[in-house]
Length: 349
Image (cartoon, rainbow, N blue to C red):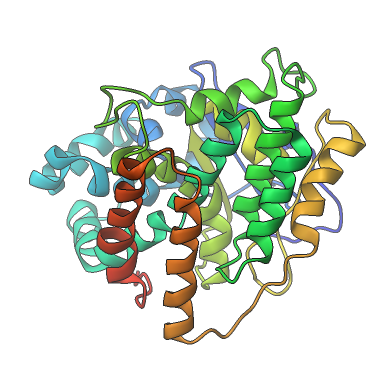
């Protein structure tokens, strides 16, 4: 994957299949080239595999599949999967094998071993997104002037907490789009805000969700956003991609909005970086998003104690945005049961 000194247009980095899934080469300054490719699959792409039939044959022949994001989602959310993971994985990958994709011998057993070994760290990775989902849900649900919402985000960005600029940018994108709900990105028939609005809506009765913020709700939203954050994070941690990496997803909020407007950027430092592409937004709109993170100072070399204290402070800050004590209790459980146990651990591949 070559770092370029110019932006590759999104339409040259996204292939939308007839069945509705998208293959996205997410880094804005890297072209997809001619392969080989490493496709990272979310749970939808692993269970609904029509996209694989619809890809050109030469792309299939130059690609390997990495369903690690889907495995994480299933392991952390699906009790039936956890009860019989090896057979479940083998059944999931069979349609893809039939389409010509190859998986190494003992692939399923190796994946289960990785999931078991890394469960605490994976739960922490997901839970780092929980507070920002709470904050974004509140800011997009309340009647609040845009400038006030942006001031709230600026306050969060200056607080003594872990400063995840990508999540701040996403929250800022949300409140900006909320103020301009008729805005459509270039070439899109749906309003940009509708994607985020649908994404954050409660799905009562589905995957353990109800009509308010619960751990299943936070877990489900974090699982989706994890795909957006994953590739830059892997690169920062030294993961060696096979050729050019791409993600495969059917989630419209990701491939029609978030990955299009807030793409990761290849940086010589290997640090996870994100940028913004207007894609039809007015200058004033996307500049407001940038202003939220321009003054945020990223602090490195934290001690384990400092990291724990600041993560706890982030969860406490997010509780200010909860609707009631029941939601605050769910966030407390997210801290004690999901974030804290694996906070000092790294994922080991």
